Image (cartoon, rainbow, N blue to C red; front, side, top):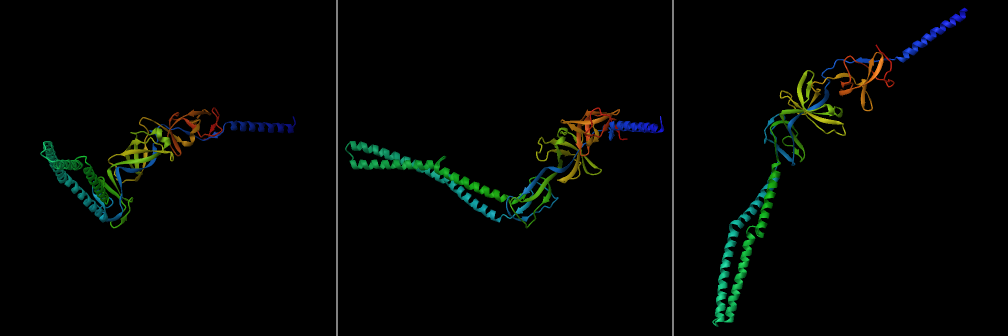
Length: 395
C-alpha cells in the first residue's frame, strides 16, 4: 500500500472515532440535578396578616351637628357608656319639649275620660234608667185611669210622650257610656291619640340620644376622627374602639393551601426578625373568594402577645400537621401532566418519571409529602425528556 493510501486510511479511522464519540455524547446529554435532603418537619405556609380585636366597634355619627365636647383622646381607656362625643342638640331638644307637651295633654285627656267622664256617664245612664222606669210606671197607671174614664185622652197622650222621651234619653245615656267604656269608640280614639303622641315623643327622645355618642364596650380609643368645635355629618366615622385584651390574626391564603389548613394547627407570628410568637389556627373560612382566589383564616394569639394594636401588619407561618414530614425541593423540579404532579428521578444513568404528592408551596420552592426519599437524585425537567432516557449529570 502506498504512502497516500495509508494517509487516507488513517484519516478515515480518526473521523470515524470522532463520529462515534459525538454520537455517544449526544445520547447522554448533561443535565442539572439536585439530591433530596432528609425530610424535616416541613415548610410552613407563609402569609401576611393583620392583628385584630375580637371586640371592636366603629362609631359613626347618626346626626349632623357641631361637637360641643370630646373628652377622650386616642389611646385612652374607655368604659361602656362613657360619653366620647357630645353633639349640639339644641334644636332637637325643642322638638322633644313640644312632643312632650303634646303627649302630656293627650295623657291628661285620657285620664279625664277614665277618672271623670266615664263615671259621670255611668251616673247619667243610671239616672236616665230610673227616670225611664218611673215614666213607664206613670204611663201604665194613666192607661188604667183612662180605661176607667178618669183620665182624658190628652192627659194620656202627655204621659205617653213623657215615657217615650225618657226612653230616648236613656238610650242616649247608654250609648254615651258605651262609647267611653272599654272598646268604646271615643275611648279607642283617645287611646290611639295617646299612643301616637307617645310614639312621637319616644322617637324625638331617641333622636335626641343620637347627639350623645357613647362607647359601646370597655376598651381603648384606637382612633378619633373629630374634635371639639368641628361640624360632623350623619354617616361620618367618629372613632374606633377595641378591646385589646383579646386579639387575633386575620389573614388571606391562596386557595392552593385550602386542603392543608385546618383548625388547631400551630403557627408562628413574626413582628420582626428574632421576635416570634405562638399562635393557633382558630377558624378556616369555607368560602373561596372568586375574584382573589383566596380564603380567610383566623389565628388566636397567646395572651402574652405584647403588641396591643389593632390592624398591626404581621407575618405568619402556619406549620404542617404534627407527625408529617416533607421534602423541600425547587418548585421548578415538579412538572404536571393530566392534573398529576411528577419529578424526574435519576438512577444509574436512566430517567424515571415519578409521581409525587406535593405539600404547601411558595414561589421558588415546594414541599413534597410522598413519592421521594432522602438521597434521591432529581433532574431539572426538560420538554424532550422521556421515561427511560439515558442522561449524564452536569457535575
